[in-house]
Image 1 (cartoon, rainbow, N blue to C red):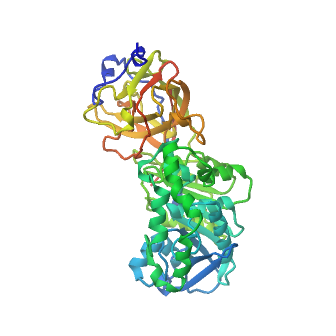
Image 2 (image 1 turned 135 degrees about the vertical axis):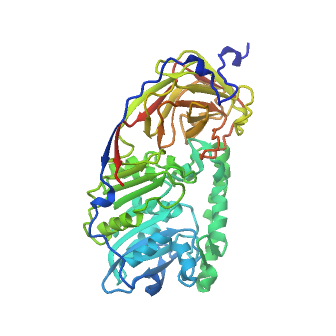
Length: 578
């Protein structure tokens, strides 16, 4: 008898109408949430810097800086500061994307592309702004190591350099989106006396996580470390306009930095890691969370942390462990988490709140920002809440997949299995035989507010050498429509050790635990919560992470007696007033 035939198969021919309908007995009890209003962030603010008449980037002073690092490499930076009396604070944009040259020469279109509106609004309010090209990009010399250990040391040197300028009040902040949000986090972990605050937006906490989710490769970033260098380091033009040709004097230094010894490691690591999925020493050296955890008591600056929960570029699992560590670090902390993608935060009060934060720490002005609730988070139903911390305090709801296809409150028995079809994309409208298993609750009695990371645990086995556990959570309305809203991915070969995956897991049952992405989701009363396991994730037109599971072809077997879904249900909801 084959291994597969020893297990009870639970597979539905189509997701639109799961067979569990015939098994419903009433509703799934869900504790009713208690909702109360709370004041808006803006209502706490006072004495926030306002635009100074006649002051903006067009009337400002532009300066070019070449900053020498410890090894003699020069970084390239440009400052735009307001033409006003007295010392001023500086907010840095640290980037690999800028091509070089005076950012003001291309006028409004160019400078908006370089800095973005938030930086230009700061100039109006009495702040200097600067764009700094990281080592090996733009017109900076040296080798672009993509978050390597020397990058943070470079940035700390640059901060102290700018703080010592005669026009500076010695207070420096850093802000940006994507890599420009990652570099401030790296700098923050390193620490610098004159760095007073960071506002990282969609930042990477661990470069391995930009390429993998628990050992499963991310399709969008295969070859990332090679093509990223080609985009940002090799060509004369940057992604944020500008061009090395605008500053021809420093082009030879920048070009020389591209032919560097470290480049071999950076360009080859992507492909060797893709084959193995291992978190090698290369990736470990770019793990900012591990660096923070190794020295958590170091004196560091304040943090206004911002991440889009629908950012499937720098995916929300970069928050996992990182946002908790930030809050444990005992620095002044604030967070905005909302339903936007890879972008600046989508709130009408963003410029005001941003300015209040910088005023507090760079102008030493009490603006009331520290009196406001620390966290504002927007759920996928469109409502903003205030929270003292995140993930919010929640009550755990544990559900168990049953052999009948029910996702219920009693522990299951038996087994469920499916074919992963080599990890290929799941055909959502024409399922292949046995290509998924589906478990659905009865209709919910009340709204279920999921705040943080749902988690799946249980014994899982595979018949092939390489296999993955790929899970999708969805909300199903009474008409059968599915709305996938959260996802989990785990390489079974790396379930016990990310650094050194097993060459084969064939025939080896493992007790595994995997978190779904950090999210804020509402499953509405009368609808069902659906858990789906297949060879890849399932989206039904909804946004989500584009994965590339490495699989040799397996039957995946779930031991239902040990399987459970743990849900963080936030039942105390403090909605922010308009």
